[in-house]
Image 1 (cartoon, rainbow, N blue to C red):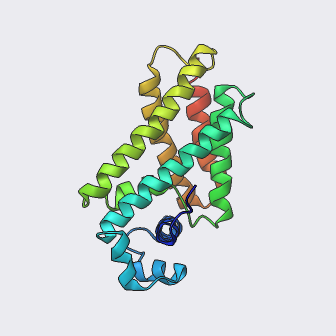
Image 2 (image 1 turned 135 degrees about the horizontal axis):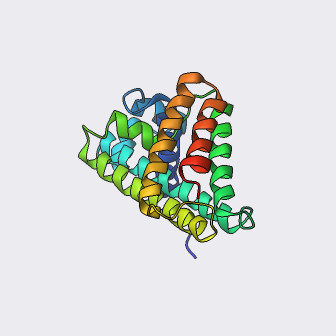
Length: 200
């Protein structure tokens, strides 16, 4: 099996650093130079990998989304397999809120923040954001359907509709998290969504 070329490693390093920087500083607050400096790559080399900053951020969005989805699937198929669908969702949002708190609330969901910051001005980024959101909602549909079958969630509303509202509630909870700089208000919102509004 051939070894990955050095250029592939550099490209991946740029994307991962982009995820880190953009998650904290946003699209407009992140310069290409600061990413290149962190990865120790000359500025001219950037355009060997990406046509523009917009194209770069679109790939950052795609990679970020796929990486997290992979982690979620590994969780429900591994450590969280014995948990009920409802408890799986609780564990996911509780863990994520704590993880963001550990960054002193600097990082948040890149999909949500990019949607509000560049979704309206970049067709390329908007396309990736829509694709990422569609995949995330599909994951929640799957878990909600399983929860409906287990009697944990209401059945008078489709899993697709509940997943759409759950996703919106999650992004709203993350805004509340940034506003209050406390986990509890955001956690309470998600608990209300999961236990009361989605309850059987």
